[in-house]
Structures are given as structure tokens and as C-alpha cells.
Image (tube, rainbow over all chains, first blue to last red):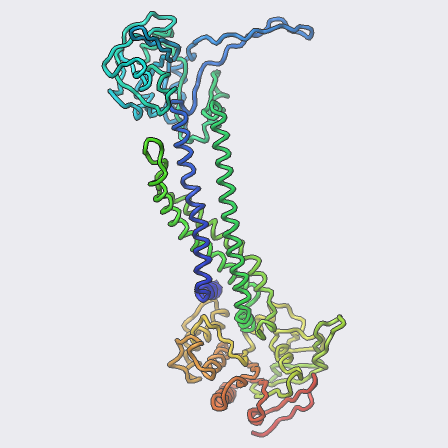
Length: 402
Length: 232
């Protein structure tokens, strides 16, 4: 292969500007592919996090209660009234929680007791979801601690955490007292320990967080919880994991994808679109490489003829041109990876979220670059097949006469 | 010793089997012995270059037999012919035909690289020795476009000799050179023939050069009209 390498490299170097331009073209195309591949995951994960707010990746709750008609048979046409869904505890939740915590792929588990409630100050009543949780566990699942804008992320008995908009509606701040009641409890006075901001008005009015035992008392769920919320390592594999869990428990397991079908569809479409763009970029790069090599074969007809006359076999000429294609792909990919990284770094400075935080950061993604280098080399090689065969088939006697 | 090449009844027809079929060689037969210094003369269009391409295994004859070192090769496949070109034959063309991307030395080392798959110390030493022998010791690292026509042709001769072929085929090797350079190049080939015993078959238009060959084969309209040894 030394002969093929030597001749391929020399031919490319001799190509000068022509080689430079196709390598630059390949690098430009590949850097956009690298950029899109690298930031898409980040961008989607960020979008999901922002859209879901405090929704967990996977939620485990008691199976729905269904009414079953007792009469069976062909002629029976019973009218079945759907049952109301009572607030019930997740059965044996302590054991389940332990099992989930030991399941690979699950990052954190947070028990939640949530139900309807009313927050009152003076003569103003606001309906809220009373949500009991353990602060550390809840933060591990939802990063809720990052959403606190005032006060301290801590829940003692008699403390509550509410959202910015609810606080404004009630005209209260950290340290003020409000009344929290539920259908099953006349309620008590609670002190506002902290205020959160989820970036969405409805979310900021919806929840009144209290400690888990407080919620259990308020909602009449002694020792019980209404759901277990999980965060997972692979956001996009949440649905698969949820289905696996569903099969091994008697509870209802729902992933964020199930709970937000429109978001999932939108993300899916986005993925398909970028896949399509990347595919066509790769195609354009391949066509560019092929066309430059076709021209190169014509330009080098005489040299190919000499090499053949000197005793280079058809297979060797074929390999010389295949190698040129692979080399263009490889060098283009190396530059493209650097370009893609730079593009991500530059773009991350300009593309920002509403609150000014970066939507994605430039990360050194070794696996992506390795795959890009290999993929682009194979792509270049494939693009070179047609020109290389043409070069190998040249009739040496005619080629020399040119 | 057996002949290097032996031709018998060689015919070549272009566009065979079509309405414009054109037979350019009509039954050529001759042999070249090791160490011979022969030239092939004749007017343009007499079929000299075609014959040289056939002998050089760049084209296949339409009929007849061709034995290279006693082995029939007229029907051999492309790989066998390519191998035979590499190991047995050397080419010198009219328009130098060096590879412009390689220096003079690299051009001469290319056949060795092809044969051994790497540039061995021996390949390099041989190439340097040959370039020194053709008087280019000082110019061996220059690319072809920095060499004069005569120098380029001397590099081409060195390259043709790189793997010590039994026969060098030269197609008008001096056709593109001034008289002085032509004489030098011719003298060089003559010298190699004498000292190393390499056989030469030289196509030429130049009667002055033809007069200095051991044997003159004359072609006209695709046949050999004269083939005689001559005293130099």
C-alpha cells in the first residue's frame, strides 16, 4: 500500500487549489453536521426541562380504579358508569421506592403526596395543589432548588413554598403567613419559607409545597403518598424504561413522553428534520468529492497511462483514487470537527433562553468526532468508487497518447 | 540463449467486426535477442507505434503469436501483462512522460516501490547510481519541470532501467530534442546496451540515429519491408 499512499498523497498535493477547495467544502459541510449533531441533544434536553417544569421524567402512581359489570354474557348490554378516581396511596411504596432506587438507569426517586387545597389570606382564596415532598429528594428529581428566587429551600412543619405569581396574588412575601386548607382538613396557618419561579405563570400559581408529613395529614393519607417521581439518566429512553417498570409493578407508570404527546411529536419532527438536513449535507459533500475526482482522473489521464505502462496494475490505480477520496473525507472531517466545535462555541454565545442562560454549551465530544472521522473517510471512499473505476479502466495505450 | 521477444504473424485490426474495421498490421514476424540494439523505422502511419505498444503489452494483437522469454503472452490477462511490463520491459516515450508530482530521483524509484512495496535501501542506491550514470547526480532532487528536455529524457531512461529490464522500448526518444541533446541521449542508450547488455528497440524517424544501430527494421503500411543487420 506504500505505493498507493505515496501516489495518492502526491496527486492530492499536486491538485493544489482544487484539493484545497474540495477539502474546504467537505470541512464546511461536515462542521455543520457536527454542529447540528452536537447541539441538538443539548437543545432538546433544555427545551424539555423548561417545558416540563417540575414534571418528573417518570411518574409512578396507583393504577386507575375501573368499574367492572358483574353480569356477563352475550345479551347483556350494561351501562357502566366510570368510577371516580379517589386519592389513594401507592401501595407498599417504601419497598417499591427501594427497588426503584436500585434499578439501573434511574437517577433519583422522590415520594410525593399531592391533592387539592385552598390557600387563603384575608378574604382572598386561591386554589392550589398541595404538594408534600422531601426537599432533597425532590431537588434531585426536578432541580427544584434552582428555581427558588427568594427565601430558603427548606421545609419544616408549618412551612410552605409558593410561586411568584401566587405570592403576588396574595400580596405576601417570605416570612408572611397564609392559611392552607383542604377538603379533609380545616387547615392551619403556614409561614412562607421560600418563593419559586418556574418561568410559567400557571405553574407559578399552581403549587403550594409543604413537607411530606404535613401533606399526609392535610390530605388524609397517613403514611401514604400519591406518587413516586423519578429522574432517569437517558431522557429519551424514559418511555422504554417506563414500559419495563409497568410490566413489573401493579402501578401505573407514565413517562414524560406519554404525558406530553405534543411535545414528543414536536421533538420527533425536529429530529427528523435535522436528520434530513444532515443527510443531504453528507450527500452534497460526497457529490463534491466525486466530481473533483472525476475531473482529476481526466487531468491525470497521461500519468495514469505512464504508471500503467511502468507496471502498475488496475487494482493499484483503483486504490490510488479510492485513497484520495478517503483522505479528502478524513482531512475534511478533522477540519469539520474543529469547525463544528468552534461554531457551537460561537453560537452558544448568541443563542440564549428568555432568562439569559445559554441553551447549550460547547462540549468536547470525542465519540462524535471519532465517528465523524470514520464516517467521512468511508463517505469519501464511497464517493471515489466511480471515478476510481474509471481511472482503473483507462486504456494505457490511449492514455499515453494524450 | 532464447530470444527476448518472438513475434509471428502478428495482426492488429482496430474496430474489429465493424464497418470501419481497419487492419494496421498485416502479419509481422521477427525476434529480438538479448543485448540487441535494433531500431524500427518507417513513414508516419506505417504502424510503428502500434507495433511498439503490442510488444510493450499495452495492446493486444488481433492475431498471431507473441512469446516473451519463450512464453506465449498474447492472450494473457491484464495482471500477467502488467507484471511482465514491470519486471521485463522498460519504456521511454517521446514526450518524456515523467510524473510531474515527483522529483527526478522519486520518478526513478517508482518502479522499485511498485515491485517491493517500499523504497528499500537497494532501490534508492540503484536509482542514485542510474541517475549518476546518466549525468544527473546534481539534479536528482529537482522536479521534472525544472529540467531541460534532454535531462528529462535521461531521467526517463534511468527510470526505464530501474529494475534492469531485458528490453527497453523507446518511442522516438530523441524526437523532441535538439541535435546535441539527441546525440547525448542516443549515446547514453548505446552505452548502456554495451555495458549492461540490455536490449533496445528504438522507433525513430531520424536516419542519422538509425545509421548507428546494429539492426534496422523498416516498416511500410503495416508490414516489414526490410530487416537487416548493419555494421556501425
